[in-house]
Image 1 (cartoon, rainbow, N blue to C red):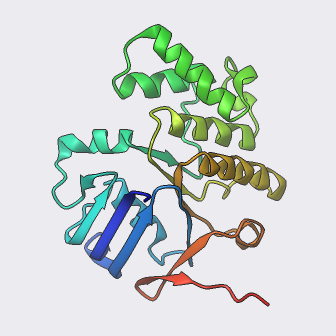
Image 2: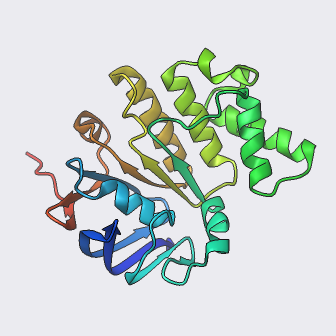
Length: 227
C-alpha cells in the first residue's frame, strides 16, 4: 500500500489575505505524478507556495511528507524543504558559481559537512540528469534546458519523497520541454512523487497523468474524454 505524501482536508488557500482557493481536498500517494493547471491568477502558485510553507496554512488540515502544515513552526520550515525537491521556472541557479558550486552550496545549506560525501552525492545527481560532464561550467555557459537539468539535480540532492515543480518547462522551447519531461518521467518511474504546475497543454497530451485544475476558486480533477 503506497503511503500518503500529501493530505489536504477542507483547506482554504490565501494570497495576501485574499482567498484564492476554497475547500481543497486532496490525497497524493507515493509514486503519483500530478499536473496542476489553470489560468494565470487562478491560484496554482499560491497552492504550491502553501505546500512548501512560503504561505501559511490557516484554514483546514494539511500534512506533507509527515509535516503538519497547520502546526509548522518557523524553525521547522528548512527541515520541511529538505524533504521536498523544489524546481522553479527560472532555475534559480547562483550565477557566480559553477554547477559544482551550486550543488555544493545547496548541500552545505541543508547540513552536509563531509567533503567526500558531498562530492559523491553531487556526482550521483548529475549522473541522474545526464550532466556530469558539465560539473565545472558556469550557469551562463549552459542552455536553458541544461540549467533546468541542474535545477532538477539540485532538487534530488536530499533524496526527497516529493518533488514540487512550478512551471519547470515555462522558459523552454518545445523540444527542450520534452527532454525535461522525459527526465521527470524517469524520476517518477523510479518512485518519486511529482506535482507539477504547467501551462503546456501539449505536454499533458503527450504525457497523460492525473490532472487537477484551479478554476473559480476551486481545485478539481479533470477527466479527459477518450474516444
